[in-house]
Image 1 (cartoon, rainbow over the protein chains, first blue to last red):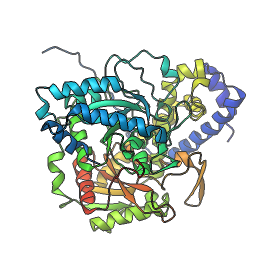
Image 2: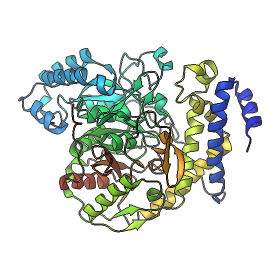
Image 3: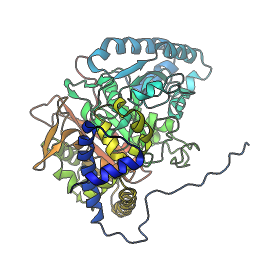
Length: 64
Length: 462
């Protein structure tokens, strides 16, 4: 799959200016990430399959 | 060469002076580092000052690492030095105000920090072929990689420069260099050791841990670094669960099995031979397969992309060409990864962790190779694994990444002579336990060491 349009749009949105030299490597590695993402999409997860990240509320530090 | 535990005993009883031990370590580093390029800073003045304090310290006779020299991957904060994390960019950073928590904990027990160690830039690599600071060479064959990203840590221990070193492991960065340099290495459970005062790579996956040449040293060092710390949000607020007193229990009734599927398919013959030797030594023929390992690896890969890319976005915008060419385009690509991929990866990670927890209801320790093969030559671009032509550097983490993805504790143990074409080279085996059961994998490691199956000698010529 050609990700060129996405790469250009996302880079512009983030304010990343990619040189021609960088863009070649970026396309290669973005394509690799995309193949990993495609692999993950094949795993059927339900709405209650929650994220592995859990926020820990922060209590104030109290001396003593 | 004497280990940390024995060295500390001799400083405690006064038969050695910490100042002499540290002076000898500094001389050894000076004499050998040109061959391995493990150190990026040597802290001679600080270390000798500290050693003299230890010699006169009223608690010296109770310090469990009295006078033991150690070194840390250069992503650990060292007071008054910028924390480089293998980069050129961080040379401009303000010096660290104080040492990392783990450095402070070891020094409180009498250990003496002697230097900072080379690594892949921002911990993003498995080879320590760092363009800014040079490649760290494998002490067992300087034409080969040390592994990474904690390559300097493993190489310094394997070269006998220090008996203990600290590193970090996000996707395999303790286990891969431990395997390739032939040292013991421990990646504890995610959240066990506080990361406060270390440069992050992927906060969801970053672990810190020790390297050593003896299991007792590895365990003692780990024990002394444990304990809650409130400034690392991932650090579990658990009491210290010391393993050193349990090491001599041996394997006992622990249930051990070999990991099949992915962990055998993605391994070359020397890695399989090492696993089989360990299985035979432990008397197990049981084989277990984990579900969806390739997807677990993909999840770790994408979480790494998302968090690693975002962390460096500002510098990628302002000064991308100051990144190491080995990491630059990967970080740039990672910054573009959509949130949906990363969230799906985190959900997959949790799914996998729940499935693997069920497996640990019937087994205590799982055995798998740490790397697919022995150390490749520096500059190797491609490897053939399982009939596929794969990028060599990334492939070093194929067998570690699915395990750190779910934060399991792992001890890497080194075996020798497994590759008949390179019998002088080590290869590591992962001993994997359920969360918070470092005692299980360390007990098995100690048993294998006692059998003579695993050892971590100083490299010949050092």
